[in-house]
Each structure stands twice: as C-alpha cells, then as structure tokens.
Amino acid sequence: MALSERLSRFLARKGITYQPLETEPVANLDAAVLASGKPQHDFIKATLLIDINGVVMVVHRFDSTLDMDAVHQFTGRRLQPLTARQTSRLFGDCDAGFVPPIGAAWELPVLVDEDVVTAESVIFSGGTDHSLVEMDGRAFRLAQAGARQGHLVIRGQGGEDREALTLEDVADKLQKLYRLPPMPALALRILRLTANTEATAKELAELIEFDPSMTAQIMRYARSALFNYPGQINSVQEAVTRVLGFDRVAHIALGIASVRAFDVPRGGMLGMDNFWRHSLYCAFLCQNLAAYSGRDKGLAYLCGLLHNFGLLLVGHLFPSEFEELNALREINPEASMHSLEQEVFGHSERQDILAVGHGAIGGILHRLWQLPEAVIKAAGMHQHIGYHGEHEEYVQMVQLANAILKERGIGDELNPDDLPALVESLGLRADVLERVQSDMDQVASDLDVLASSLAS
Image (cartoon, rainbow, N blue to C red; front, side, top):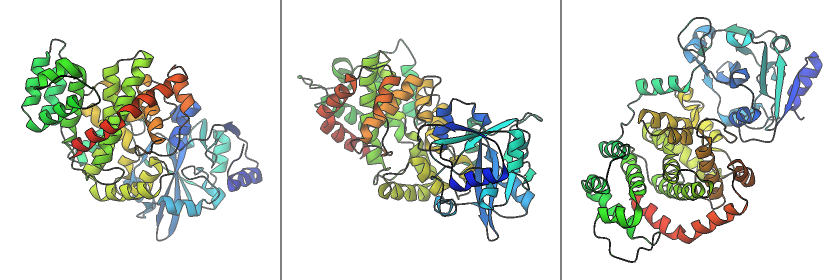
C-alpha cells in the first residue's frame, strides 16, 4: 500500500508500527471513512492553521469540529485555516484532501486534542486517496512526541464523556447565528395537505390556485410533451385528476413554493437555472428507478427534486462565497464539490459550520422544515458514496441518478462514479441503466423547457 513518501519515511525512521488498510480510491476523506466500515469515532484528522509565524497542525477526531476560540486561548495566536492551494503546496506528496495527522513528518508544530491522546487506537489517512493507517495508542503517542495537548474541539454537554460536534449541534448553531429561511407558507400548507390521507385533488387544486404563478407553471407542466395528454386541460384540478396525479402535482408544487425561500442568482453551474435543470432531471430519474426497483415512486421523485437544497441555502446565506464557489465550479470540472467548498469556506469564519458540506446543510434544513425522513437522508447523504443506513435505497437512487447525469454534464459534480456498482447496490438488473437513460433522452427537451420556466 502506498503511503505518502514523507509519512512512510518518518514511520520507518522512528520504528513506529502500524496496520495498513487498503481501500479503493475515493474522492475525499469523508468517503474513505464511510467506505471503510469502521466506526467514525475511531478516525482522526488534521486541520491546518496559519498566521504570520507559520503553520500549525491540529489533530482531532474526524467527527469533531475545532473550537477556534479555544485554540486562540491555548496558543495566544490568531490562527486561520489554510486554503486548499496552500495545503497542496505544503503537502506536495499527498493527494488533495488526504493530509495525514502526523505533523512531525513535515516538521510542523502539532497540537493534539486531549480526547485523541487517550485513544486506544486511531485510524487516519495515509496521504493518498486509497490508503488508511490504523495505529494503536502507544504507537500514535510516539508519533506525536513533542506535540502540545489541550482541549481544542467543540463538545456537547456532559462531563468527561462529552461527544464531538454533531449535525444537531451544527443545526443549533446555524439557527443561532443566521436567520434561516422558514418554509414558505404555501409550501407548508401543501406539505400539511399531503400528510392528510383524506386530502382530495379538489383541495390541492384550490390551494395551488391561490397562487397565479404556480397555477401557470403546473398547467404548463401538465400540457407538456412529457405526458402527451391528447385532450384539453382547463384547470389545475383537471391537471391533477387527468394527467399528473395527486402526488406528482403536490411534489412539484412543494418544490416550486420551497425554492422561493432563497435568493440565489440564476447564472453559473450552481445558479438557479442549472439548479432546476439538475433537480428535475434527478427527480425524473429517481421516479423511474423507483418503478424498476419496487420503491415508492412519489417519495423517490421528491428525494431527487429536493436533494440539493443545501446549495440554495449556502447561496442565500453567504452570497459572496457562493459567487466564488460558482466560479470555481465552472473552471474546475474535475474537482469534487467537497474540495471546492473547502477551498472557499476552509479559511472563513464559517468553516466550523460549513465543513460538513452543502449536502449535510440541506439535510439540516429539511429536518427543520419537517420533511419526510427519506428526503432528509437523500439531501444529507447524497455526497457520501457507499452510504449504508436509514433510507439508503433513496440515497442510492439519488446517487445513481446524479451519476447518470454527470455523463451528460448535468449537475454540480462532474467527476465520474461507478455506475455498475450503484446499479448493483440497488439490486437492479444491468439493463435498467440503459432503459432509464433512454426514457430520459425522450423527454430531455421538455425537462429543459420546464426547468427554464421554473427558474424564471
């Protein structure tokens, strides 16, 4: 197994023993942790900070977030995170995003969180996209000889067994620091209506018709070549009962109403135009994949439609950073969104919140909006290839849909995925991939027209 050159030399020179863990190449450390099957809490990582006096490496658990105030008090220095560009220059023998938490190998001063020092064993990146290192506590402490130890991460309540920052903590911090957009009133009313098993098409139509703009969009959708309805459609209720069905109308109306919570520019790969195009294509594919795999088609459609709302929230709360991220996405098609987000937000004061990525941020928003659990998971975990857990089939459908769309240049992630592996993980036949792509090709022009109308 190939570790980074300097790490390999350092461990050999010091006689430090370790267990190599071979992995398949992955896009980032998050994916490596998920793919390993090991407990997340066993992993540690390095966060690199800098000021006028130089670079410092802070070593802490993977599932924790640095407390920058605590770091300042501990060091007396106003340190800021390195940018991805600075990191790549310093760690030229490592793959981007895979810095080993052994600063001595690069002759860097190291701070180690006290929770890591007492660990019986740790797992960390070997410096490449296909290597992990497992090391017992004694060997790790030897590797960290000379490092300073302290309480450096944000922890929850409760004594010595306090846990590191969770998504619930991030959600709480987001709510306290920023004015998160509430679910628009119309979207909330649609959501409540769909939760009522006795709701009728007439009630849904009446709710939509309160909004002339949404009425026009639903009518345009029903009359599109997507459905090839031969007769006249003169009302929303007819669109529901004759063409679209209750669930599809409710879901597209929910999406239209929810997007109004955000003020995001239209242009660029991450702008509203491409957001709608990506979302509609993903929803269409997820619905078809659900039909082939025996899952709930309406729920799958909603998962695909709403999975990328985290990007909208980032754009809404942090417009200048979103503009930079949008520009970087255009000129770096081979880079993962995770690495681009680190480049933009890794050196900002919001790093501790946004380090979880736009997917998790979207999952947090959907939870606050009380959307279905499968929709929450699809948003929160769609960037995590190899995810296994609650509602994994809906997460994997979104991942497979996005992988198909990457081949067509649609979406915010353009680096390739393993399509056959995703098909297999969903238990689909090999020919399904060709069928859903053929179905998509037949309606592509109509999806493009609909996306353009929804973005305007």
